[in-house]
Image 1: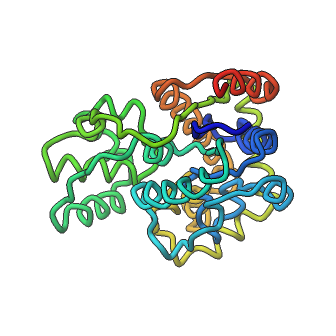
Image 2: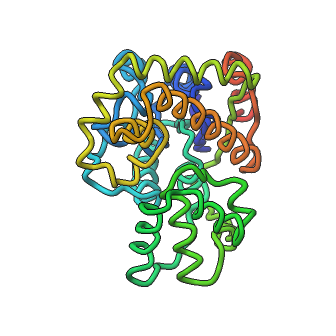
Length: 303
């Protein structure tokens, strides 16, 4: 299938829905490669809690941006936008279709549309917000965000302290909300974008999430989190599956409570991902098992 039109097929959807398996089947069908837009799978030290593709899956199709960085480095959505566009330029020299997969809405948007130039906060603002978070936890920061920017609050991953603190920081720096900056015109890319959303019955999705968390615990998540305690203030560590286990290791909650919280927060995150992607672009939705239907749809669009 050789033509001059280059297309990025983006596979999105909630955590544990089956994006990796679907992306691999698409990559095999179109004889192409996969970019991961999962903001935690970049880090080679974070394996179990990020549900990275396993060795077999990595062999089934060539993946990029898996284990590409160390947790010691800070890697932002803007960095990813720059690196992913560079990689896509070289992949599109030999491929007409490339697959990108991930549940991190901001990272997907960075590549497909470009990010806004967010203002830099004056020195001390982030430190003050981080201090507030340390002392009083996330709840008051979330309340403040809800008050100043209900539109962003409705779609953001508000259980991620990094996202909440960044939005408050932007407001402190400029007097404008995050949603104000997100209304910018989309940057024209030298490729087409087709976004495929995967979703399924909510109860079934929640069962998949619960099962995945149980597997992570059996697979050694506690040991993985323990081994990363030197980096616990890094943004990637403040996310679901890591922050709850740190609470357990600190003796703040019991083992059972920690597992329940990981499951509950994963379910809440999944709901927010669905909300984000339903509002995002022209996403066309399928069941994760409908690979044949997805391929048929893509073939029609591409031709």
